[in-house]
Image (cartoon, rainbow, N blue to C red; front, top):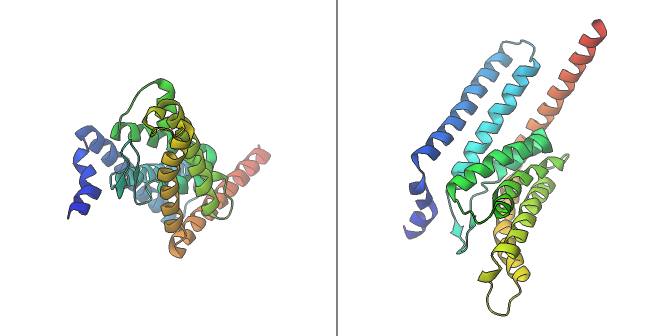
Amino acid sequence: MDWFNEAFGGFSEITAVTLVIVIAALAVGIAGYVFYRKKAREGGKLTKSQWTTKEVTTAALSIGVAFLLSYIKLFSMPQGGSITPASMLPIMAFAYIYGVKKGMIVGFCYSLLQFVQEPFFLTPVQFLLDYVLAFSLLGLAGLAKNNIIPGIIYGCAGRFLCQFVSGFVFFGEYAPEGVPAWLYSLGYSGSVVGIECAVCIAVAAIPAISRMFNRAKAQAKAQLAGTAKAKTVATAER
């Protein structure tokens, strides 16, 4: 029971504003998904705006699910950071499916929610490293081509690099006596991000989930190719 309270106790910290944001994100995602599926079933051609709607829908769902998972803390570190049930995976899956640029935008939005969840501000540079850049770089998962696993490693490496630098520069004072600040930060950030990365890989390696991600990526590529072809035909007919 104590473990359950420790793992799920973070939900008691959700403020009304945060709850509204999460509900809004999920509502937008679900409504957009229903609208998109309805259009697809009608058999009409998907226009560029409808495809954008699908991307926004998926982004909203990814952010909402990732944020809710981040409140389930399997283990919390004393100086910040925690192990969650693959809370970064929805963001990296979005990047894998839709590409680095869009993935980094979604990661940026998620970083702001992470700051709302655990606000810790020392300087603008620390804020950028620990929140904005660390979670925006999860979008590097979009570099992976045919398998999300390398993408997870890319995204986690980006987050680790930012938080390693932040730990070395701003939190070196917490290092045990005789331990260099860089080594302390390497071990601390490496433990948090490394375990989180391993959990994400383990979940993504489940065959059903892996197939789901690859199928979504293939559909996205096919849709993008179809849109480009339609634009080429329309231009030629003018």
